[in-house]
Image (tube, helix red, strand yellow):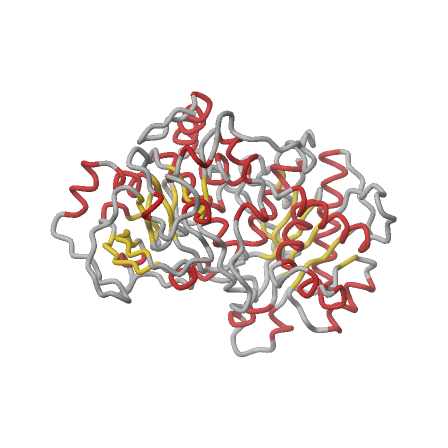
Length: 472
C-alpha cells in the first residue's frame, strides 16, 4: 500500500461517503401501538402502521456470521507506524501520515458506538483511525482493558470499508509506563466545565491538555457534527478554531498544549452525528451504515457464543442452531428512572414481553415466511431476581446463567457481556428494551446481518429513559 500523509479513499469508499451525505435528507417516522406498550424504532423500511421493524419484506439477509474474513488489499500495520510498539505513542507517529483517536469510558456499547463514530470521522477527515482499547467501566475496573481486535474482526472491517485502521497497541507498548503528553480537542467542554474523564488516561499513560472545539461544530442536544469536527483536521479549519482559544492545562504536568496536528484526538466522540442528535436511532445514520454494520464479531468469539447457544437450547455439539428470537431486557441501573415507586411496577410485565415475542413471531411468518418455535427464544438480562427468571422459565424460554457457567472465571469479566451481545445479534427476531443502546445496536445487527426484524419494548409508565444517559 503506498504511503501518503493523507490516506486516499478507494472509489468504492468515496461513493459510500457521497451516498451517506445524500441519505441524511431521508427521514421516515412510524407509529406505535400503546395497547401492548411496544414501540417501533424509526427505520426506513418499517411500514407506517406496523409495530415490528425489519430491513426487508423479502427476508433476504445480509452476509451472515459465517462470512469469511479477509484483509484490506496491501494493508500492513508497518505502513502506518515507524516500527514496533514504542515507549510512547508519539514516538511511533510517522511524519507522512495523519491520525485520529479518542478516549473511552462510557460503557461497552456506548464505547463501541464512539469508536465507530471515530472511524467514520477519520474517513471524512482523511486520517488513519487509531483505536483505543475498551475500558471496563461496566464490568469492573479490576478487569483489564480489552482490545477491539480481540472481540471484533478488524481485518474484515478494514476490507469492508476499504480503509486502514490500527490500534493503540500497534503504536505504543501496552506494558510500558512512559507517559504521553498530548494536546487534544474536547467536545465535552462545549457544555461542561471540564473535559470528559476516562480511566484510559491512567492505563494508557496519557496526560492530556484540551482545547474546546468551536461553537460552529454544534448540533442540537449537546451533539456535534461530523463535518464540524472534520474541518479541525485541515489547516484552514484548525487555524480558525484556534483563534482566541486557550488550552486547559493537563491534569498531571499542568502544561498547556494546542491540539496535536499529526494525531487529532478527542476526549469523546459519542455525541456526534451528521445532521441529527442521537443519529444512531435513525435509519440514515452514516456511522452505522458505512462503518458499524461492517464491524462483525471475531470468528473465535462467534464459536464460543455458539457453544453457549447449543447448551442453552439443549443441542448436541455441532448440531445446527435453529432460528430463534433473541431478547435484551435491561433492568439494573434503569431502576433509577422509575421514580419513588417499586421497580417491579416500572418494568414491563413478563406477560407484555410474551406479547412482543408473539408479535415478532407473527411478523416473521407473515412478512418473511419464517416460522420460529415459541420456545426458541433466548433471553439476556441483567435482572437478578429469581422470581422474575422463574417466569421466563415457565414460558419455556432459554437463557444463560453466567454465574452457574462460571463464564467470568473461565475467560474474564468481559465475557458475559460479549456473549450476551453476540447472542442478541444472532437472532432472526429481536425484542429489546427502549432507551438502551445495547438493545438499539442489537436490533440494527439483527436487521442488517440476518435480514431479521424486531421491536423495542417500552417501560416506566410508558416513557423511555432519558437518551442522554443511555449506556450499554
